[in-house]
Every structure is written in C-alpha cells, then in structure tokens.
Image (cartoon, rainbow, N blue to C red; front, side, top):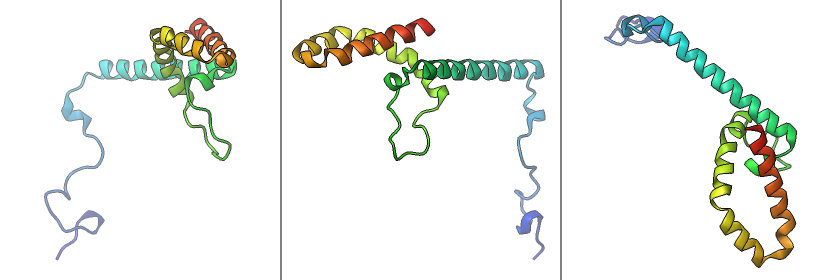
Length: 126
C-alpha cells in the first residue's frame, strides 16, 4: 500500500493543505487588519487597566486572592481589567442589601467600609 504525507494512506484527506485557506474566503484585507488591530487595542487597554488596579491594591476585591501554595495567579491582569466594571455594577445594585446585612453584623462594618473605599478607587480608574 502506498503511503502519503505523514505515513497515512492516500485518501481525500491527504491532499488537503494544512492551516487556514484565507484566499478562498474572499475576506477584505483592510477590514481584517482593522478588526485585528481593534482586538489588539482592546486587549492591551484592558490588561493595562488590570495592571493599574493591581498596583492600587484593589485586585483582592475584584477577584479571589491567590492561595499561598499556588505558584501562579488565579486570574490574569486582563481578567481583572475586564471584570472590574462587573464588580462595580453588582455592588451598586446590591448595596442596599449589603447595608442591611451589615447592620446585622456591626463588627464587620470596617470590612464593608474597606470595600466601599475600594469601590471608589476602582470607579476613579474606570
């Protein structure tokens, strides 16, 4: 039996080229480059925003802190920059509920106040 490329028998799959065949998609090169540039800019800005939040020390409010035995971060800077607005929105929606819960536990008021301070810092960066 005759073997094709990679040691596989000749078949209809053996003659197909590897990778993406973009020539047959008839994609507009200028539009493709524009969307790739837009994606790169969005990723870069979000990552820089995550780095800024990490430098301010409010990343523990946006995502779970990394455990001591863990060698890598739980979430990337991109993830922190992406989810900071979600954290702000959820806290503003649930702030009345949180205040009523905090009135039940007055000894936790300091922790709640730290969270509100972090909220104002995060809002100032967005």
